[in-house]
Image (cartoon, rainbow, N blue to C red; front, top):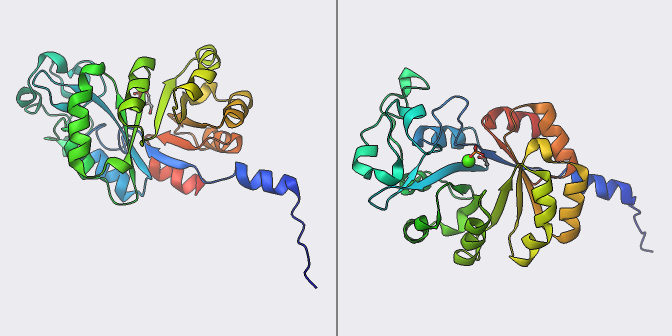
Length: 255
Ligand code: G3P
Ligand code: CA
């Protein structure tokens, strides 16, 4: 006679909530290595991160370059705006020494160089920091890489992320926000525009938001978390990903 095994509903719910989060290395493993460099990406892979996040701009000569700020000042000591500067000039800058002399000579990467580091089974999260002028070059770089399936796109600008989803319909695209009222207002629009979810500043992630997203059928990701206790709170709420400067610490804490 077959026996039915009874699994209490609360246990199933709990198992679902405690699913392993994706660990995204924020600007690479940037607690140790200089952010948004090949060295930071490679360190993240060595530490077994699931994904590396990076920020992109378009240079004056239409190359997709990886950097966070609107100018090169903070990470190279010299001031250039990517949109007004040819990539050969940007590439002469030292984007490593500010972090540690041992990283002297790290360059501002071309996006293709960073994508080249992505191992099989891992992802790259590309944050579009500039305007829609980047899309033609971005499409070319991503297609040429042969790793399009491994790419994920994020942006704070609403029109930019909607456009990204239009151009890359098979790739996951998440809207970034640090404002709870803005998120509440956009919940329905996320679904209408076929976005895959929202990627939120950890401080605004709460049960109400995660439950609403679940009800509507999309994911909540989070950034930037280096505190294990905060990471555990977010995982218990059911976020899909933890973006961190310290993937090694988060992996040892959560996995
Ligand atoms: O991953 C999202 C996060 O990177 C957004 O903030 O300023 O670090 O680009 P920011
Ligand atoms: Ca970013």
